[in-house]
Image 1 (cartoon, one colour):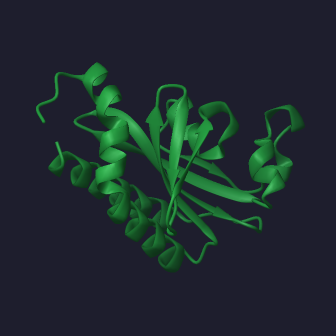
Image 2: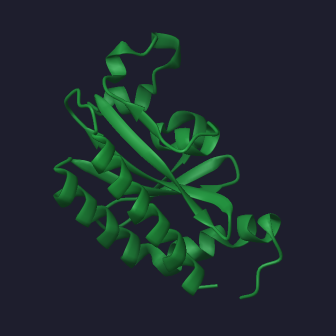
Image 3: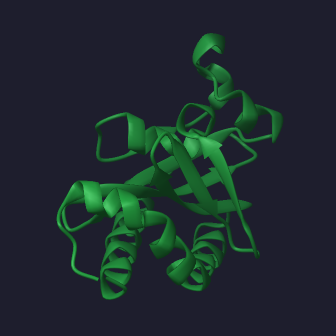
Length: 153
């Protein structure tokens, strides 16, 4: 599959997600174990939605605005780290994450051919400050995930 830029990547992201989902699940499971968190996910942007791939079978599609893992897709930053979601002003809180008991979050972007296509995220049920070393390792895994996706183009 030869890509013609960002527009084409947006069109094929759902197909890439299907092709790569077994690997995504393994990456998420590895992250859960390595970082000792209950939730790890890869989120791929699909227009205004993000499709989440967890360590278990299946996936979930949410609006980017409703998913805390959509933050690295919506906010132009290298990473998003929130030590305690309860300290975020209520009008900015990701209500779905709060309802699921998420207290801390870190997410890094996934790039495919220099285009932002997704995020690799960790969440914990307790307030937690992710270390610089942990965030660096998460970035390495996100970089590797982008390369994995490129192999399927």
